[in-house]
Amino acid sequence: MKRKIILLIIVAISSLLIFLIFYWSQNAKESLNTKTNTPNQVVQVRNNKLTTSATTKKESDSDIDVAPLDFVAINQDFKSKVPRVSEEQLTIFSSVAQKGDVHGCHDTSDSDLCVYYYSRAKKADDICSHISNPNQILSCYNDLVLIDIQSEFEKCNAEKFIDAKVDCFNRIYWAIEITDLCSIFQKDDIYQACVDSVNIRTATSQSNKLLCSSINKKDIRDFCESIFVVGDFDKDGLTDLEENNMRTNPYKVDTDGDTFSDSAEVSDGYNPCGDGKLPAPELLLELCAQFAN
Image (cartoon, rainbow, N blue to C red; front, side, top):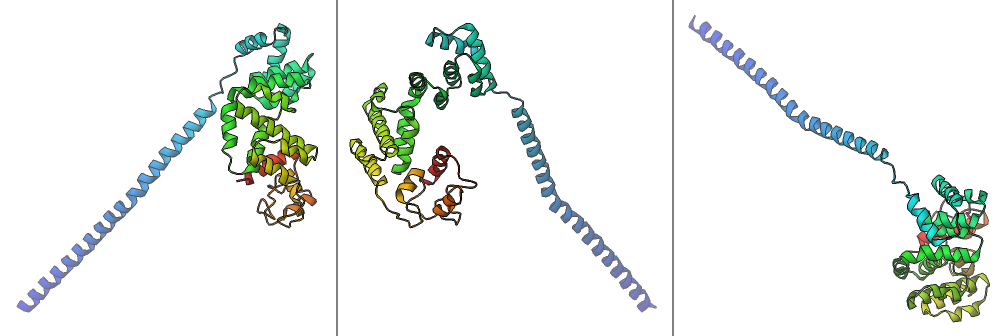
């Protein structure tokens, strides 16, 4: 009898222990799941907040308009610069500038004056090239480029490679076609860089190597003379002269690294300095400049 009672007690205790162990294990599992899920929930909330914040900022930025040009001040400034301009012309010119299409100047009574106005309003010296009168071009260029000539000059001088430096100077002095016009630059080093830029552009455009000797800066002079050396250093099928004119790399078979040689791309009408078809010469020079460094 005693044995049966002891056995029943042992079974009851064992059952209780099993129940307690099972209960504890279930609670421990739930507690672990809660702890494991909490960081993910926090991250998700934080991400939601970040997303909401970024979206709000984007929407907020899109609602902010760029400050409009002050055409009252622009008209007064232009009137002081060009007294002969009429109020009617100012109204028409400002309307063209507001539309942002310089080609609208061709429909005005004085397209050159309109482009001059447009260039000054937008502070864009490259627009000056739309003017047909050479003297007016120079006035437009003079008004705009001299504002920041020192920093532009320093930026060109900082170029590591000579071909990039020459390109940079050509972009600064694009409106100067004869060396006498370089006199608008008062500082000797800026004036001399202008003269050298004109001379190297003249030498290459006229295919006249002798003009290289008139270049003052030795590195630019040597670069000018190297252009006229017949050869194909990288053996890609384009002469060094042709590569210098296009600004592709004369020491690299494939300037843009797309597995097609420069000569193959050019002969097939494709861009040797990027994707797509062969662009206009001016754009090609700009695209090839990225491979100069």
